[in-house]
Image 1 (cartoon, rainbow, N blue to C red):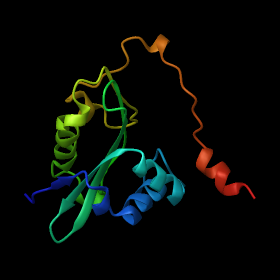
Image 2 (image 1 turned 90 degrees about the horizontal axis):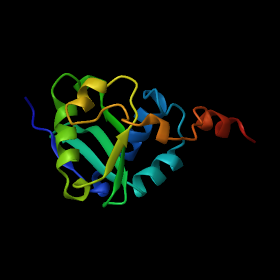
Image 3 (image 1 turned 60 degrees about the horizontal axis):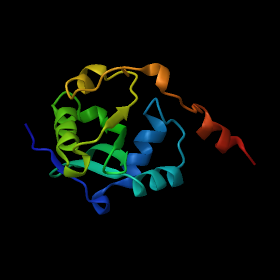
Image 4 (image 1 turned 30 degrees about the horizontal axis):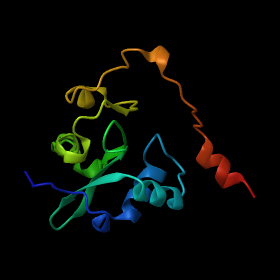
Length: 147
């Protein structure tokens, strides 16, 4: 198996690849503008997964204060590289990162990867009645349609 190299150096990220995946393939962010992706990267602890002679094949980011809270988002492995354990390798790196140790709450939202995240201790909220959200699922499409 090829060795996946994980880096948190934002300078190594292939922003074109990340934007293309998030805007065209990811169910959670279809149509996301590149400027939004760039702002999200700038405000997050980012993890890129790279294969020698291939380039970037995986990505994840965590929005965090580095002390009490973290939100894991935009986790993906390119379809051509799936089934090789790269998602687990990426999650191992995220969960081991020094800035993410000792967080009181670490959250994420997923529609299809519950099994992966459960291996790292993620579960449904123990008290969902205490959580609230503002959800705008069509925000990228509405912004694109605005004059």
